[in-house]
Image 1 (spheres, rainbow, N blue to C red):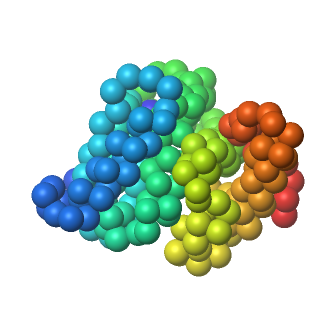
Image 2: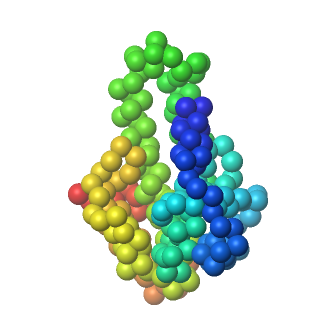
Length: 213
């Protein structure tokens, strides 16, 4: 996992500094604190503000989310959805699971001799795990933000900011992610209609979305 941590740190280092006292930064901080107030206590969570284009990423090895000042240009609903998704990665322990997978295949030093024999298996399993985690973070974020009055249209607007994306090594395609959100939204509506509590059904909704092609 040291390689992944170093890669993430390198990406952060390439970004310009944020204007910490700007109006955009204030909007990001206000939305971030709003979401933290809705979550069960899970320890302090740090907001790392950076400059540059639209960007948000949960950080490896620490309870922190790196967010670009540009996120302050989003409407409140999209901003909350984006931040809640990244908080979901932290709340659900995703980086710990990813670390465990890498340690399973590469328990020692990262060398060509250690990585080459396991590259295919590790790649396939990391791909599957990453997609599962993205679906789970989507479900977590949507369930957290939905009671604030933002729904599928807001989530779709955020997902479509970069156009319709196909499956990648780390992220499921846009259509599959939207399919999960529709399933989750319907379930939340059903529970509200019947007086039951809306639940974060990350596992179930994600499983259904995996098969939505």
